[in-house]
Length: 160
Image (cartoon, helix red, strand yellow):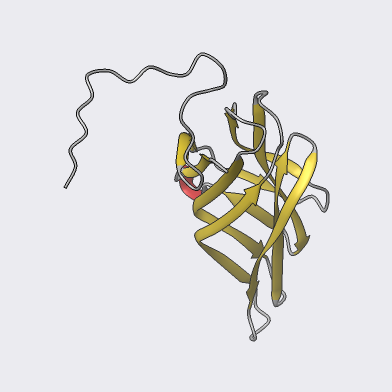
């Protein structure tokens, strides 16, 4: 058995400190709690964003979005569908569908927890902003933060 005793660990003079591959280097979180709705068939910002400054160009960023109350509505008719899009700056990363269907054709609504995750390789050490957009593809409305319930975005830098 070996014992390592250390009084002080100093960051290296070149580079950005200790980065063990596969480990979390830093976490940035943001909460957004303003009900944001759209009836548009074009993407619009939801207000949910977060910015991280990676310590290495080789790092990956794990993006976790938790919409505590997101959904779609249709006032009469069966189908309601909205899309959520995750972006890095102006670069599209992924889309996710939120859909509700009423077989009785009287109108459709769904609000609940909705999760998105993505692993990104921004290849930069500059401040990098991620944001969420939404659009209504079928129905009357798509929204996040129903009743001003909070939505969360977590950015985790993973060393490579």
